Length: 304
Image 1 (tube, rainbow, N blue to C red):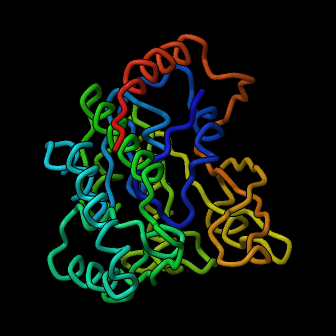
Image 2 (image 1 turned 30 degrees about the vertical axis):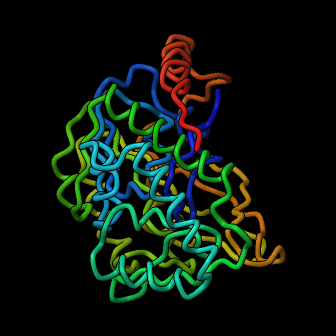
């Protein structure tokens, strides 16, 4: 099945791991899908639960997806915005990029959050919550094909949100985990402890311990994404904080570094409070439902 790519790119995005994560979900899951760290939303958008609560402490992510949900951001508005911004960027270059970045930090307009002319097209924030990714010096950043790609991503997410019951909330993970019910699944993708991360509100050992305490006492099933090891070291917290839970692993490359030498493999880990039953393929009935749904909403595209 085609992997859904969201219009927002975050560091550590799980696009290529979404099938792996989806495949560990029990076949009889019928509750709410809950994400306290939704980030780009890529996992939920590929799992496609019928009901989901998607949270993040970063208000810009939540504002962006709520704007799509309300219709304030639509494929047509994205198309017009990117064509207009691309023209200004081509005429004024780097100076205009920093003007837009300053404008976003001041006014926090969701459309400005979609400005992908930054380095690697990624989002990143400084300690004060300001967007701080430098300019990307690729020529003609908003070419017709690139605008089409982003517009179609927005179109797909818009139709997904219309078909299912998704709620986007800006709040700390504590409350959403506490309110989860027995039949729910909490999927957590926090910043990776012990790795260099630029999370919106920081992440450290104290944060990891607090998350561990709440997941230990939650009523629902949970899946936690983290790192297991790389060529140089191992995640020590798997042998301490998370040692009482099941752990499965998969090798993965993250292509977010500025240089090829920094793009090394890492062993990904999923920590669960239930025993994972490996499935060669996604449950056939669920796979058929998702396939039909993808055909329905994937056929909607907008060309510049």
